[in-house]
Amino acid sequence: MPSVVNDSCIKCGTCASVCPVSAFHVCDTQMVVDPDTCIDCGVCISECPQGAICNDAEADEKWVKFNAEQAKVCPNAND
Image (cartoon, rainbow, N blue to C red; front, top):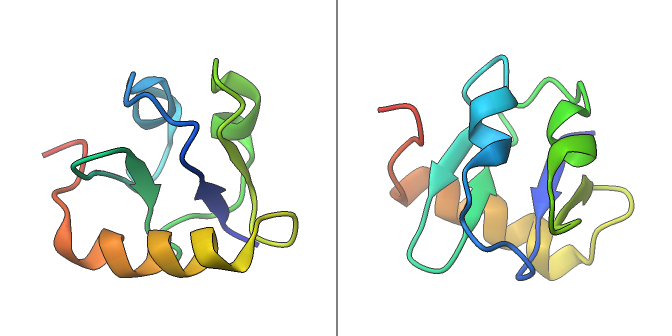
């Protein structure tokens, strides 16, 4: 189950800095997770100061879709 970012994200970048597989992308309003890259280690969930990240089983379906769609068009946070 990949991680999912919701609209509580403030784009601080903490998630991207702790992600071992560079699954985070920077979009206009928030960070998002590429579900194809995420290995569901959970490190980002525990490190997010806003509590804006959870696994996809706990997330609202709109955020699951949003993350998957936006990860395809937004630049990777580690680029």
